[in-house]
Image 1 (cartoon, rainbow, N blue to C red):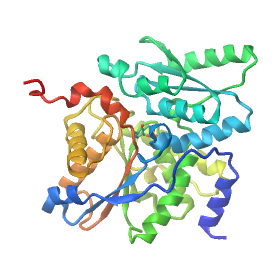
Image 2: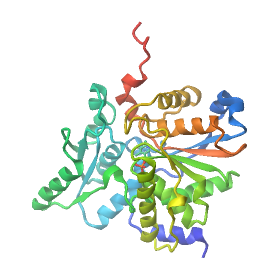
Image 3: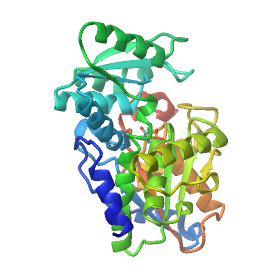
Image 4: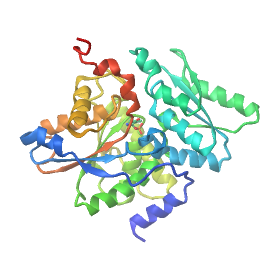
Length: 350
Ligand SMILES: *Cc1c(COP(=O)(O)O)cnc(C)c1O
């Protein structure tokens, strides 16, 4: 049996709830190429549009949620508890998916970003959580979302409910299967578009997206080295270690005998700036470039920083001449509204 068939088979055996409109398209970034001109050295830029999904505003968290909700259903759970930062994209799509699946949803939101304002606290994702009908618990500084969620799960259990606790950022070896599935999808698309050797670039926050893609490439017998990530949360070393463990966990769940090692995991931390959720000039430039040239929206916390990394790597000549680079657009548009002050022009009100 081919690697592709056995991977497809193994994935089919894992419980899953369909939430994603797949395959998401791959599109060229012609106008950005035009603007970057000779600096590109023949590099061709593409995006895979994982921001283009219908449910709850979409984004990468929806792929991961397919397997978490599958696992919850397989365990007879009637309530999903999701934790995240105030502007978490994961909790937002969880609320939407729960609405559609008729499962109760409780969100535990913690202040993970040290510098915020009124837009951050009340705009963007927070409006949507409420519209989707989730019960929202907003914690004060110093409280840990995971601890609160565990206590809340005990309370619900005592009331005869069956809560399902999702991992931070929605990432573990189960949810990463969503990106193993995406690796299969991507592999087919790349091969049929003459992009079989393309370099794939993604943001890495809670690791699941990167880990799933790595596991998928490995199981398909493709080189994991073509995948590069920019961490926006942990430093490169910690991020590499946790991504590796998660990816190998997914391979184990799938019954695959292959394992990745640390050299297979390529993560740079030069775009993280002062920390998670804190703006950088390069992120603002990247978001503006993508919007003003292509009419597409990156987000300020993840894909904006990762695409800034692509721009910086192009300028530094870090891609081979003529290489094709496929950037994973992971969604998160609602967070732009929470970062109004970062994008406001100084002359806005003049
Ligand atoms: C969470 C998130 C990521 C990072 O994905 P992880 O699986 O947490 O590493 C990237 N982009 C957006 C928009 C996200 O919300």
